[in-house]
Image 1 (cartoon, rainbow, N blue to C red):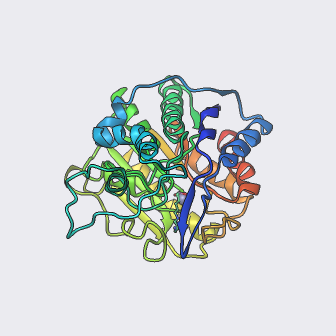
Image 2 (image 1 turned 90 degrees about the horizontal axis):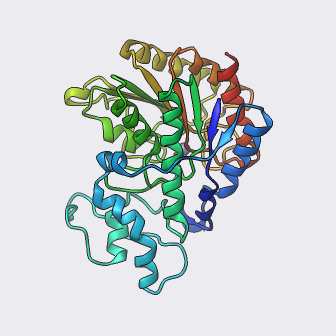
Length: 343
Ligand code: OKP
Ligand code: ZN
């Protein structure tokens, strides 16, 4: 299996985030991608190559063009306002306020185009976001070209990014863009299987009324976990997408046995949908040692998860999302990919 990786992720560094009661260094760190890369190399998974450059036309089908444009302009606007540290929003529109008028200055715009304070901007953020997008599309091209599977080592992640907002460490929805790229290259049906600990709210929303892209999430119950406001079991899709969205929320403390029961339900739904290709939003924050998550999977479980994904029998694109236990992230990701490749 080939891995696509760009060193340009590293400029997205020194970000911070709001945790309950404090501003702290962001858990989503450059070291994550470096350790995954090292483990993939050590596991002998296959060649690691850099992405080709792709234009943003597919991203602009799923995201509002003004939002993508904003992402590229944030740092300049922030600097022009005389700021130096990471750019972070402090006010957000919501029902009861005007949600349709982008304000004129950077503080208003940051809130207008985000869902939380979890997607901050530094000088290298846009270049890293664009490189992560290019990584996803380049890896998708390998699978579209006939490879059984490929690994897009994306950083920053993407699955919380919606049509018009950043949030939860995410800016451009890499997995959604990759899924759409398969459709544009002629795949009739695509499934996005999101195994990150957190619900992929952005991906769900982008495809919610579409019958050609199935979205399946196995995640911590949003009643008790970020992103709180999407990811419930009664969200089944709408219009042409009715029945093509499946949420399998699980309680804090979930172990691999419970996770696997949910996965069996997911696998049955995917088999019934019969996609041409599957895009896996791959988070390993289900690990028991994850500092911001509360499932209990162990390192030995990830190769089994990979084998379970292989059992779908479909061309597969893995797109990196979350996982914050840096001491174990490499082994967990490489183990999952090895479990897939050896199945
Ligand atoms: C991104 B991905 C309270 C905690 C916010 C944000 C988690 C984003 C996870 N400030 N946590 O799905 O791994
Ligand atoms: Zn996550």
